[in-house]
Image 1 (spheres, rainbow, N blue to C red):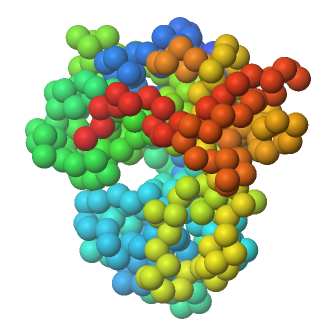
Image 2 (cartoon, rainbow, N blue to C red):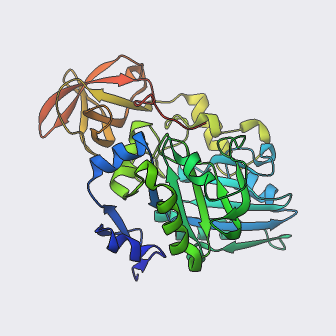
Length: 368
């Protein structure tokens, strides 16, 4: 598969980014460094290129019913101009992907899916689209640049670029407005950092202009470009799951503490029977977040032990720039998942003490 450059690639090179191949795209891992970029977002604001994400558009009377049949949450509860966090499951209850559902109009919807799952998700949804469906289904991922502004100063920066009143706009809401002189720009008040922020869905030909205008508007707040490395550490401090690490086809939403996005009462959907069965039988493991009580750097795949017994495995881990300690997420036996429980993470065959913590690990996020 060929590797694609995003519409913002030129700006990454100019900013001295360390470029890596990620999900079929040439993406910035970092510019100045993961730690300073992470702290910049926590303290003021950062600008992100998220163009590798996938965007599927549905329009027609049957679109909502189809989305409901393929996702765990209930799209009928989503108002026009609202976004919803959801997931898709296989018949056995494992997770296909987690995603955002946008309601753009009465019968107009957008699904935002993970970059690494884009083709898989598109094929999965298409394979279950009913014959004679009375809605259109279009993959516009290759024709959309996605720019995010994240941080406590995000609203002040974004407000410089639009006459749209952002103050009453709630978290997980979307709108269209003139932004940076460009009409009818779709944007949402969303993000995966724990901070306030906006994500702008752009035609490729205006991406560089919007990037420059955001940087100019954010100059007084010392806005800086942020790479994938800090994006990962920011989401980990909030216990936001990453597909492929913390959730996948072998985990179900109950195990991943995503039961709040499973609406069994809405009626039938893909995986519902398996999820009912799993809930009835009981959950043997839970996804928890932890802090290390000693110095160390937990990583994906490290074993977790209690006494002489292996009781779990680290799914994501890092050194938290905000907390200055090792943190992570892990699947652990359910009877050990209670907040305050102690265990050891095996770091290079050395047991390092850790404690189950109440999420989020970083408590100072600024999102509304």
